[in-house]
Amino acid sequence: MTPVDPLGAWVERKSQRRSLSAFPGLAVRALRLVWGAARWRFVAASSLELLGAALLAAQLYVAKLAIDAILAAQGGTVVLAELLPPLLAIAGVTALMALVAAVSTQLQRLISELVLRATWSEVLDVTSRVDLMTYEQPSFFDELHRIELEAVQRPLQLARGLVNLVGAAAGVVVLLVVLLQVSALLPLVLLVTAPVLWVLTRLRGRHEFAFVRDQSTRHRERLYLQMTLSYRSDANEVRSFGLADELRRRYDARYTRYLSDLGVLLRKQVRLSLAGAVVTSVVLVVTLLLLVALIVDGQIDLAQAAVAAVSVRLLSSRVTGLLAGVGQLYESGLFMTELERFIARDVPAVPMGDVPPVAPLERLTVRGVTMTYPAGSVPALQDVDLEIGAGEVVAIVGENGSGKTTRAKLVAQLYRPDDGQVCWNGVDTSTLDARAVREQVAVIFQDYSQWELSGHDNIALGRVSQPVDPRRVREAAERTGAAEFLDRLPEGFDTVLSTAYVGGGQLSGGQWQRLALARALYRDASLVVLDEPSAAMDPRAEARLFADLRQIVAGKSVLFVSHRFSTVRSADRIYVMEQGRVVEHGDHETLMALDGTYAELFRLQAAAYLAPDVAEG
Image 1: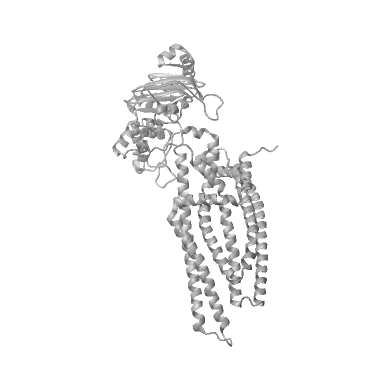
Image 2 (image 1 turned 60 degrees about the horizontal axis):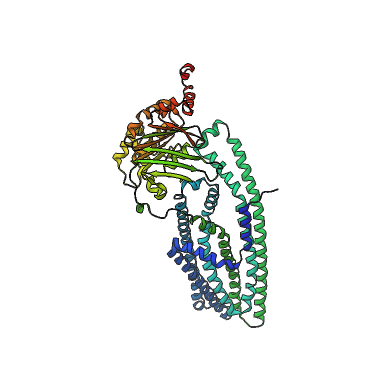
């Protein structure tokens, strides 16, 4: 049995239910979006559209004057003095219409970019401010992916569709007025086609939306393969394992499937467009026959008939444009609904400058903390305790998956516990603004960021709330040993740390970690959290780092996370994690004397470097 896609079923129901009654709400929401991003440019573009409609009426009027002048000529002689003014007027109005259209097009382009910027600004406000636990929810990734896919194009369609809607509606009104001057029957015949064209427009929009929705998974797969084949991050393994041909085969297969599905869609759209063209052509023929009947009956003259014929053709295209604009609003309706729901997420609204600061750390206490990830079936932490005093170096050790990094993120106020307390200087952090606490914490995780910026900027990002102090930047680099290799780069500290840029430089894994440590020191926080800070270092560099660690972080409290037991033996206190629980704690000598989990794992790791008799001793 084919699995049911709840999102797809919901989308299908929504698309089926929409009717003309939903249009005012969609129009208001679209107008609110465009008005907030580019109100005066929208007013200007709409005014130009209205001016274009007025110029259309003027063009038809001067065309009738020219035809009257030609028909009034006797004996086949055209009086230039009578014909030249309307011809010049036609030329002038036509040129002015072209100018208005050109300016309007460029204004719409600018409006589209402003709307796009405003939309992304709201999306980024959410993604940059939601708590880290939100990123542990698969539903958030699904929602964010849909927003990112649509955010690139829907605001553009909304902005252009709304402006075009104004112009098309004004043009329809003008042309209806012109035709009413000729005969009341002409607008009625033409407006009969509107419901048919509306249905066809709705069908085209529904097919397009369903296609985009159905292709989203294959689109992500194709994009992933494309990035894998073109980005530097996977280039080593692609070449080492000879994966290029296989990945290209998979990429081409997915693209071939996409093109096949696209062909099916285009054939449907062509058939609907053909149906619309047939309906429009039939109505046009009927209208022209009606004009002939009116001429024969003597109700209109040839000049009126000519203007009416042109008006009929223009009205047909304007009605089509009007329905297309409405269709764009409907097609974008689901995106707007999901975007509004996404933006309405609960994120901190108080500016950081208005958040009361917290005092430097004197004692951090974790009491009975339990925490489970949203997608987890068992707690990542269970009834965990921990203490860090001022100036202490506290270590957390354990095997992979024991909860070490989770505990570090909890201390760094990136997670909130489900149960228990984390107290900062005796105050429960749940009563404090997490951002204020984080101002007193410097964190280096194993997957630290390698910013494609200068060495100077990579360090200065440690404290962006204050003006950059070049002296402190160099001091932090010197204390961690980063200055030694930064000074050797082509532009020294000002070298961009990426070979993707001309004149850029590249660092080794160990050098990047020293740079990350310098960034943490520049932050000048009272608590430093180090998550596997030596993972990319060779034994010599690692030994040197930990020999210097107390001097580097002198005066600060340190929470040190590692799976290498040899690196933490000098810590004031060591907590041993196992399956989310603290099973032992104490200093190195105490834990070795206890002869428990710590001692067992310490000896196992030591056995890899020492002779068997030494390791056992």
